[in-house]
Image: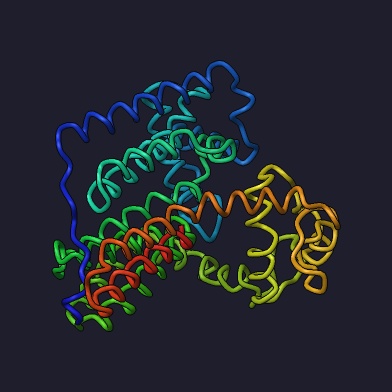
Length: 372
């Protein structure tokens, strides 16, 4: 363990913080409910129909084992949302608004987690800016936060709680077997909910190895025990279904035959497609549908994988989308550059070892940013 490398919590949640966060949550609920009531067609997505029908059937009486209502074999989040929707239908009646209250509750919890994470570890200003940015996010984020999928969007909540637990451990505030068990439990439950939360788990693991080295055995055992406890529903489902949820991992990453209508891709090709096509297009034009053609054809049509003539975005010779992407990346990365520059300025009077420690910690923060 390297005890010199620590992260210190700046503060705890105070009365004003609860008031600020409560105000943001009120705005969240007011604006989203107003959207649902005023323009319901703009808040719908075809896959939510199954969640509605499943909740209706459960209220009428179970027709099959509970885990069989899970919409996908690789993520239990759909079952969680179906359970919440069932409860909302029982309380408020069957309606579109009752259906939408389930994802809206996850959105509210996510906003609260963003504020708490920012407040505890980066200060009130950071908490307000980050939570406000989530509240007034881009159209794709606003829309997806009203779709009861139990998938990637909602799994961000588990990643945020992972970060809260992890930074508490890294700061020595919760550096106990119980703290490690809590991190393991949240991670295990998040992996059952949706495998996407595994990205933040990997980021936490890499960060710990960079800053602290290999943890003690008793802490690893505590984290493993918590993870196994969180994974109980994952094991329950997969034991009943020949571990199809586990095999799905191989399909997703190109090591098995996909059951979906996908073009076969290896792990490297999938990674290049994600970095060079999906992420840029997701930022520039999130509603573009590229799912009906193969990766090579899409890359050729969009001009996203032309290594011979340099990386281009949009039609060949077009600089519009390239400049847009550059602007997006500058906006995303500028705060990190400013923060690192500020660290250099503040710690300029210290020795090289101290400066290296500060820069290393900020590089780790970038790891968090990339994972998120």
